[in-house]
Amino acid sequence: MTSPKTNLLQRTQAAIRAYNTNRVRLVHEAEASGGAEAVAALEDEFNALCNAVFSLQRATLKRNHRQYASLLAESAEAVIQTRRLIDEAATFLAVLDGMAAAVTLLGRTLLLLGK
Image: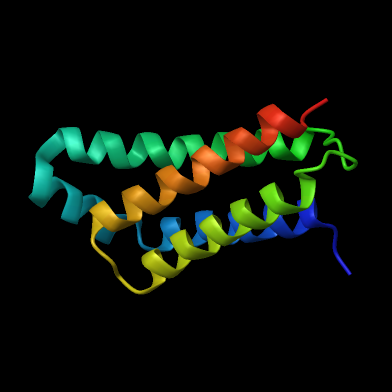
C-alpha cells in the first residue's frame, strides 16, 4: 500500500502528463477564448502545479499533524478532478479552475505539513 504522499505525487504526475498530452488543444482554446493573457494564465497555473510536485517530492511532511490525512486526501481529489477535466476535454476555463484548486490545496498542504 502506498503512502498518502506517494499517492498524491503519483496522481499529480498523472495530471501533468494528461495536461501535456492535451496541451495543444488547451492552449488553442485558451488563445481563441482570451488571447495571450488566457494562455499565460493557463501556463502559469500548469507551472505552479509542476512546482508543487517538485516541492512535495523534496518535502518531509509532519505525519502526526491532525490534518495530515484530510489535506492529502483533499489534494489528491482536487488533482483527480483536474485530470478528469483534462481527459474529458473540458473547456480551458474549467481546467484552469481545476488546476488552481489543486495548486491551492497542494500549497496549503506544504505550508501546514512541511517541516
